[in-house]
Length: 489
Ligand code: HEM
Image 1 (cartoon, protein in one colour):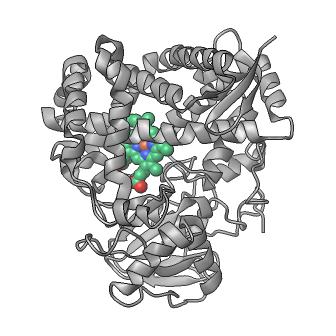
Image 2: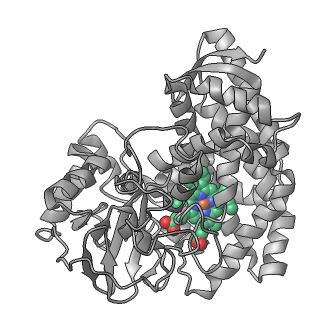
Image 3: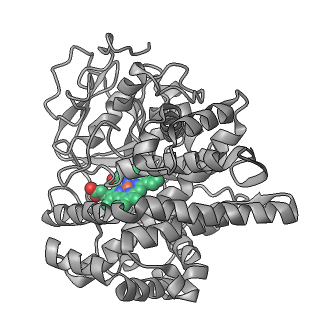
C-alpha cells in the first residue's frame, strides 16, 4: 500500500510532520497483540550461529530479510554480533524492528534510552576517546548530553560561515587531482581524493584549522582517522575479507587502543594547537572541561562527520554514474538553470532533482545502517499490523536499509527512483526518511538523539552533486573510480 497525502492512515502515530513520530503519546491502537516471534537460541550456540549468518553465510541484509520471511513479522527476537568467544560482557540478544512504524519507537526518548549503545550492546573502549564518554554514547537523561549536543550544534553554526566556500575550494582540488590521474592513467580511483577533500573541508570549517600547516596532518590526517575508526568498529561490521579469516581475526575480539594511540595523539596535539578558538568556546559557552571539548570535537570530526561522509559520498557518486535513464543530463540542466554564478546552500535548495537524488541515496543506502534503543520501561510497540509487549531493558535493533524499503510507505521500494522526493507526495515521504536517527522533517535538539548535522549533510551532498555537474556535462565510472569526464560546454 502506498501513502498519498490524503491517505496517510497506514501508520497511526506517523501521520504528518506535526503529529511527529517522536511523540510518546501514541494513539490507542486496535491492532492485534502478538507474542514477539523468534528466539535468542541456546546460550552461546544461538549467538554464534546468528553471528556466522550475519557476517558470513548471509550478510546483514539477507540475515534480517530471511527472518522477516520466516517469522512473517518485521518484529522478532534474534542475536546480533559481536558475541562468543571474547565478548563475554556483550549481550547479543535484541528485538529487531524492521518497518517504519516499529523503527520510529527508537526516536521516542520517553520509551528508549540511548546510553552506551551507539553500535549495540558492545561499546568500544573509552580509551579511543581520551577516557571521555562522548556525546553519541550519552542518553538524553544525562545532563552532559545537552551541553555536548548544544556544543556540536554551535560548532556547525560557527562553521557555517565558511562551510560552503571550504567545500567548493576542496572540491576543486579533488576534481583537479582526479582529472590529472585520468589523463595520465585512463582511470582514477577517487576514494583517496574524496577522503582528502572531506578531511580538509571539515578540519577547516568545524575546527577552524588548516591541515596544511602540518605536513604530516595534511598528508596523513585522513589515514589516521581511517585507522582509528576501523579499529573501533571492526567487531561490528562485515568487511568482505576471505572467510573464515574475517571471523577469526576481525570479529572475535576488540583490538586495543594502543594500536592507534600514536595517531590519536598527533590528531589531539594538532587540534589543541590549531583549534584553540573552538575549544575555548566549549569551555566558556558550554561549561565543558578542556578534555571534554577536545575529545568530543575529535569524535565529531572523525567519527560522526568524516566517517559519515566517507561512506555516503562514494555511494552517491555510484548511484549517479550507474544510472541508465539520462539522470546526468537532467541534473546538469537543473544545475545550469538554478545554480547561478556561485553555488550555495540556498541555490541547491532550489534544485528539487539534486535534493531528491540525495534523499533517495540516503533511503536506499543509509550510511549508518543500524540503530539501537534500550526500553526505559515496559511498553507496547506497534508495527503496521501487530502490537508487541516490550520489557524494560530489552534492546531494540533497527536495520535501516530494510526499514527504508518499507513497501507500506514507499512505492517500488527496492528501486532507485531519482525523482521520488520531487513532488508533494515526496515531501510527505520525508517523514519516513530516517537516516539521521529521526525523520528528515524533524529537528536535532538537546532532548533527542537526531544527528546534529542533519541538514548540513543533505545540503553538502547536494552541493557536491551540483558542483560535479557545473564542472562536467557527464562523468563515467563506478562507486570507487572515474574513467572519463566530459567538461561542461
Ligand atoms: C554523512 C554524514 C553523517 C551521517 C550519515 C551521520 C549520521 C548520524 C546518525 C545516524 C546519528 C545517530 C546515531 C545513533 O544514536 O544511533 C548521528 C548522531 C550525531 N551526529 Fe551525525 N552524521 C553525519 C555527519 C555529522 C556531522 C557533519 C556532524 C557535525 C557536527 C555530526 C554530528 C553528530 C552528533 C553530535 C551526533 C550525536 C547526537 C546526539 O547524541 O544527540 N554528524 N549522526
